[in-house]
Image (cartoon, rainbow, N blue to C red):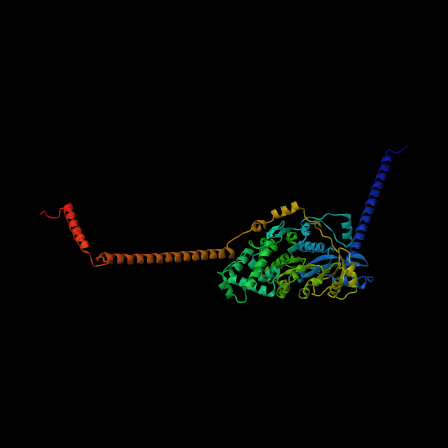
Length: 585
């Protein structure tokens, strides 16, 4: 007979077995998970150990030197990755310590080799770390920094190859323009603030004329004549060569009428070229270049210069004025963790072309001293020889793109460029002519104040747009700028021109009044003469009526005597008859 409890017991055993199997499976899965976690942790530890480890035994001398030479503590600006054997080494980064950005730098290379994109890469990273940036946008190519970049397979392949974690990012951007020529908040400077030295550079004056222009500025200052725009300066010169101003011109020793006339003609030509728009008020307060946005990122101020490319001396000298003004206004800060402002000076060779010695001395002094004010300057040009040696010696970081040696002059420039770099294992004359677009030979100022090893570098890609900002976006950005209400409209207050015109008008009125007074005095004198003549005639007439008239002859004929006596008798009788004064006889 079968037991009634048999089937339940069998079911219970099967259920227990199933539970045991599930537990075993769960434990196995947990063990696998623990093993995977351990493997991942081991891999991470190995990666960290590899990053911290000394150079591998198979690193070449250059790779080992670059790896060690660019390992900095603190904030850095990433430039790119070392190129070794034609391929980038993502594990060997090339960078600049952020604190060394105020030791100045040079970005050089032939046209079309990527200098502008290098400038954008540096500007984006500097601004992202809370440092304001000012850059001259000569061709209008940099405005894309205000918009996030666009991804592509080619771009991502490049960025992965150099270890760059690329993310599309827009920078807080302010668009400026010289005097409102172009789309941007108008930037102006007064003639007085610009000064005679910088203005002489713009006008192309020789040393004698430059000295004479300095005397004119001195006269205007002493006479209390504000020089706000070019019309003011022209009026001062016009006054000094006029009849009214020649006595004052004579007192300015060393300033001749001929020299004043030459300067005046140059100013007229300069104004006819449209330069009047750049000078006047409101003058830019350079403190507006030192702003950060609400997120703590530095604002990138771009001075759009594409509309004044035909006036290179003007915009390059205007940029020099900005630097000089910053130097005058900013306090000393010494060495800091990061700069107060980084200034990118594009087309820098235009600044030094045909410059006087005094001008070059001023540039060199400004570059040398402004570092202690927390301002870093990066000159962007074609070859290092474009920059005077006294300025070049102060540039701690060098990013040299491809150079071309198609002419004897190019070959000479190449040789001069090679001589400015530290000794390395590279044949720089060969490397510099073979660099593809987007690569550069780099050496920077380390955090210890020494130059880093020379590194052939594939540069990072900008995270902002590499195309110019659309016109509609540019206009919207300018309209929304907090600077537009302050600088949007030009102001024309009373200055030297109005004061001198009023002085000349007052002088003309005084001269006219004097002439009228002289004329009145002359008329009065003539009237007095006429009165005297009439009085004399009257006096003579009076004397004549009181005496008997002269006779022309005292002898009369008997007939005249008889007629005369008869006439007198007849007259008496007639009078008596009319007035009845006589008695009848």
